[in-house]
Amino acid sequence: MDTSVRIEAAQADAGQALAAEMRAQRLQYFLKGRRDHLDLSQEDVAERLKISARAYGNWERGRVHQWTDEKLYALAEALEMSEFQTTRLFLYAVGRAPQPDLRAMFRSAESAKAEDPDTSAFLGDYTVMMDALSLPTFVIDQRWDIKMANKAYRDLFRDVKPHPTAMPSTNFLRFGLFHPGAPTVLVDHLKWRLAMLAQLSSSLERHGEDTRLQAIRRDVYLHPGLRDSYLNDMPNWVLGCGADLVHHEGSIRELRHPDPRIGLQGCRLVEETPRSLQALGLMRLTLVLVELNTGHIPDGSGSHNPRAAYR
Image (cartoon, rainbow, N blue to C red; front, side):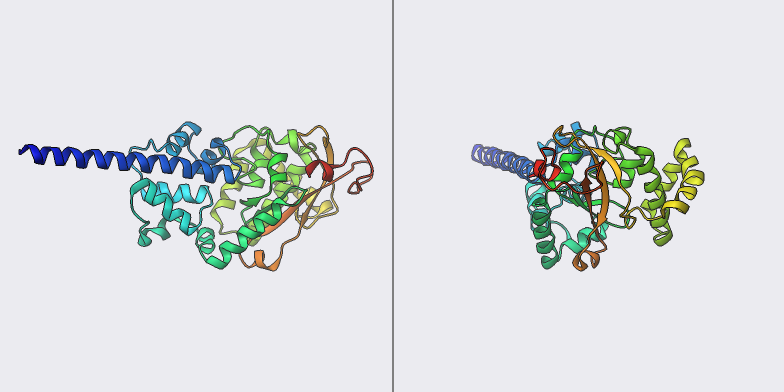
């Protein structure tokens, strides 16, 4: 081979290596910036992806043997990326834009809705509005998957240890039913659990074909204590309290906030869903904290004021 040809080939290889290194560095900054914007840890994102935290750490550093479209679409969904952000993700990871014909295979119906510019803008504005609220607020779909949650909600569950399937940032029913640390926050756990089992039953009556709800019921049946409660205790409880956890807003249950200034509080679960969210198949819930001895939201006159502590 001619010397000049070898030099040109070596220069081309060096250029490609440099470009790949620059893309990997940009990918790392891009993923970390997006994760920080969502106030998520590497463990949180790994749980959403159903991989280990170590594996996600390698993803974030670009140490992936081969990026596939499936991995990249899953990553985009876990980090709640817009269409534009997803395109940047592909460019940084594999040096090309997404392939439109493969998108439907890897993106959920909810993500597809969010690709609409007006919907994306609305959801972005709604997230900002929620973060300005002092009480824990979150948005769910029919499966009780968490779609949005504000800072007060994340603060409430900030000390919850990682769990492979039942994190409060992923699905509220699964967290309350299966996470071993749930009773540390949801204090009178038996009441919470019975109400959540009733909600699962009610949700299945409306959406019996939903495989994710069916999977929760299957896991309940595999848990001896929960199976007994679901088949025996919960139907009796429903007779006295009603089947719907969401709309039975008179019930006050107890929870404990990790901030000692807030501590043990009563809690009402209140639905307040605007039509714009309903049209997307979503529902917004707020955990309204109340003083246990009065059953009312503190007015701020005392030192133990949850609303003040959240500000």
